[in-house]
Length: 185
Image 1: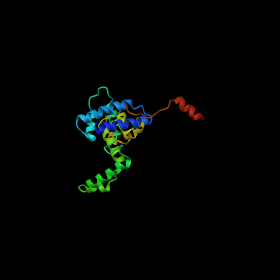
Image 2: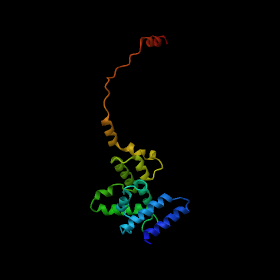
Image 3: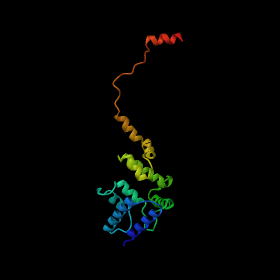
Image 4: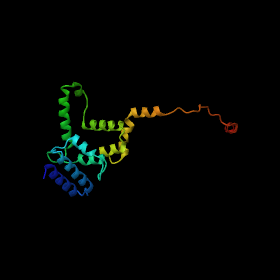
């Protein structure tokens, strides 16, 4: 049994122990592990996860659901990375990148910044907001609506598509009857 398959069994057992049914996710993750084993991969990389997630749909869900499943899968050291793990790694990579690009030191780069930037890029690329909400793990697309509000270029494109009205605006002229009534007050 491969290390990934054994990690999958532990992960599914843990999720079921927490009360989750986890049937559809287990089926998709089993398919993912088979995909990884077919590639002789022992470490989950972004490129492999994306390659698997964007395979043509068969009995599985959309690519967004596939990515959500893989996102919570254990890393090579055991459990999924914690927020602090992600922050520490990002800080190390930003420091390393700052050696060739010193302007990075003056910028506030956090996991949240990257998450927000990725969501904005997906939105600008035409990805549906409900898919972005799924990918971000939002409970509802209304939570993700702030990205639509924040994107000024999309607003400018929408305004550019508007046509000016054909009628010329005229000043309102109340009927004589209304004017007479108002004067009696």
